[in-house]
Image 1 (cartoon, rainbow, N blue to C red):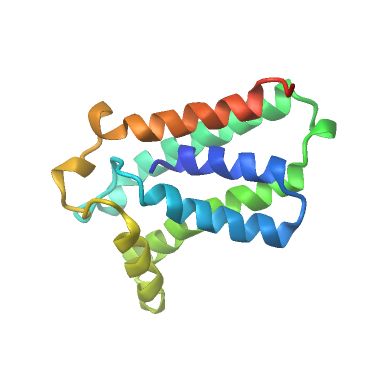
Image 2: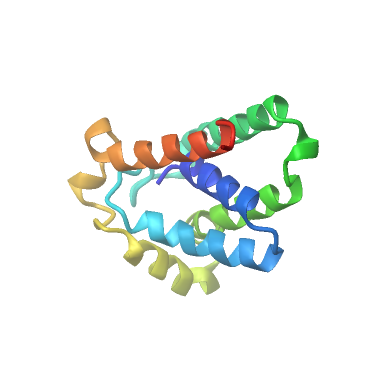
Length: 154
């Protein structure tokens, strides 16, 4: 999943739950749940630190969307702290993978392996190549999250 999708789903969790511990646990669980859905990834085994621009762009898109949410809806009406907690824990498994792969933090290996094994397709599978055909479920999740965040409540 893209970081944007994790930011959006985390933000939904942060708007719906009030307990910070429940937000953290749910955000982590949802990260792994949606990573188990077939999806594409733009980062793969052969990615290097030079590919970090993709990560930065992806994260920027997600955070800009949440910034737009804060601008459109008054932050007085939004649980900003809860949203930020949810975003952090929604991104944590990917952050751990980054630390393991690029900063050589070997003690994180068990979490990285669990995270990689949760994916529907193996990292080298052609079905994880980043393209529209392999990303349609992720797009649906992102659009649904945006709808929950931006559309008025009934």
